[in-house]
Length: 599
Image (cartoon, rainbow, N blue to C red; front, side, top):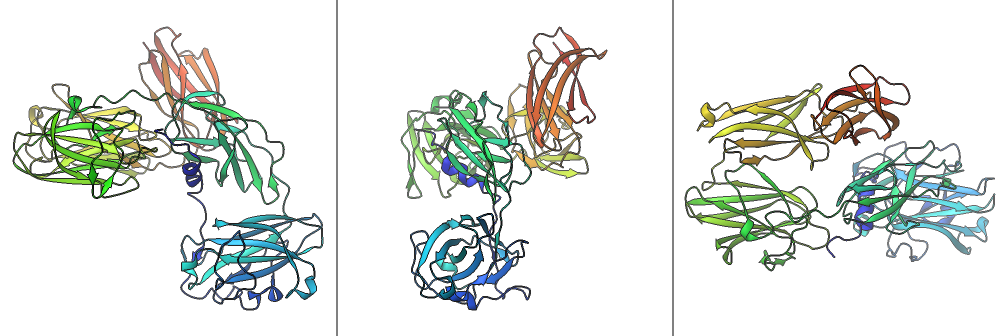
């Protein structure tokens, strides 16, 4: 199977913003309690009870009072620390361990177990019963203990990472009477029953609710959906979504008091169909790369042409190879650089000869985890054509987009990398050509996600008749950038209509302060009008189409998430003419208006 199911990758993405513990090479600061007496149960330190005043500690001493438990699997010499707390009248006790904020961040893992004792007055030697635990490398552990009011519980903490045992670690632990569970939330994106949603990568988004400290996400191809992880935010990224697959999902807010009650509403969506194979799926249809401007490509839906090669002692799976060809302009060395744009872990192989009679002259597979591969070829011969083959190393979910760029004496540079920066309310783009041949100019393209681009302007060639051997500088200002990240690229167009794409850059946008229509396309439009709407927060909105006199011709409700939103409305039934499209939020904010032309 070419696309693996997503829970593992989804779980990792879910916690990209998670908290880690602090490492401090110096002793914890003077306001913290240095652990000494709580290295065994009899010296257990009281964890805080309402109000939440944290007890800070450092693992500067060592001691073990109980053997390893199945939850933690730690050695006998590993430190453990003890705290105690009394269950309040509610019968519930929320125990939280967090970073105290000192020192530099590291991936430091903690485990925690909670016990009750048959003889609390004589802690040492008493019989313990484990009633709760939080382990398996928990970076930010939390436990909800349910015991009769007045029960004394003993909290045991230890380090999971044995390699870090000789270093100081500072943390905070607090036991609280938990608040009531938060209310339910509702899903925002994808909309319920949505079809043709993003694949192989996408997002899930939902409304925030008061009192929630996290959101339990349930997602699977069966209904009811399965639990896959807890998110701290209201939007998460998804990787390795299979194509043409229906998913069911729901989100349940959670806090120290547990999950929200009665949140059983399930939404569904279906991912888009797998795209057709790329045009350069085999050697005979290899795409010619002329010049050295970066060219974007993809291995998605590609099929295998030749077996995988052994490269740098690795042999992957070449079931998704695509082809390019280059002709050396002069004898010498040339370099091929392939940069992945999606989840691709690229392998690059170069051949001399002709399709059906190819000779391997070099390969690159030196990096892992989707990093850039660089292949340098020496002794290229002027006028000779060479074939470049690119595929993903591993069959499981590694197909994706990439950028291929040529450089070196045999492949002279004609276009420098596109650059950009935010300056006030606009984004300034710049690039340089070192030489131009029959160049018409440059189409500026922008994207909200880095994959689907639309034109936003054109800069004609400054060279006389489109030809120059000297360096020429260009720039372009995007006066109305999107609210979130903006992705840009150049489409260099020759006089014969051939074109070359540049590298892709991103510029982070400013947070919007009101609803705005950042972009509409295509314009003029025949059937469907795409809207990019920027919103300062999650909100309800109305999309309204009117004629120039203000008569309402169409109205559609929409749910916006904070940042940029991609929406689409059908205008196929409108007569040809000029119209206005407005976005108005339900709370009465000022309408955002753009004009469009219906063909």
